[in-house]
Length: 249
Image (cartoon, rainbow, N blue to C red; front, side):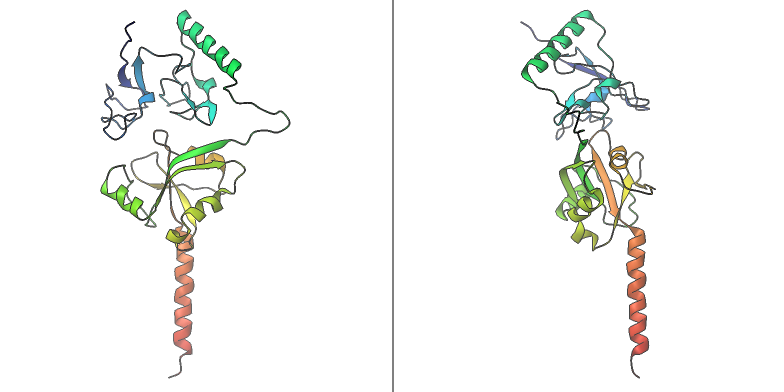
């Protein structure tokens, strides 16, 4: 039996324009040309046993095939959207294979179970939690660059951090970088544009963190809280002035 070799085509990420996928040497699932993961590129043919659903219908998403996350069979590993937002494969044979695969999962118990009396707390894995050194950072750190290795050497990049909706999120993240933050607070930065942009919010929440994690590599950016830093500077300066005034001539 001859197996068809997968062919990866155009990237469907919003406003991308990349015409073909070429893997990076250090990240086989990431495109060398456009930096988007493989799930946003067209695929021919599709193994519907591995990818039971097709493209995501969330606005401006662009994910082309659904593959479940290790800790949540209902959530896509590429775009983080639930399987309910992904289209069915159209061909009868694809539907037959997908249904057979679903039946197998039901028989083997390889699907999430839910207790009606005890709602499940949503969980999320942050692949890379990155803390900036500066109060107002002017660039992102890309894997394999000198800046990336610099932050790693200073323990400012944490990997595979799992959080849930019931966690004390601010304290958990703060404790990971407490020494590096010098007892300052921390704030979120958005990774959706070309430059770091401070996220304005009244209350830190699970959904807020989730919405600011990058889709492709699941990175979350934080940095020192400039307000907290200014308070520390002000208090320190006031203390120094007070000491100087109280010195005897």
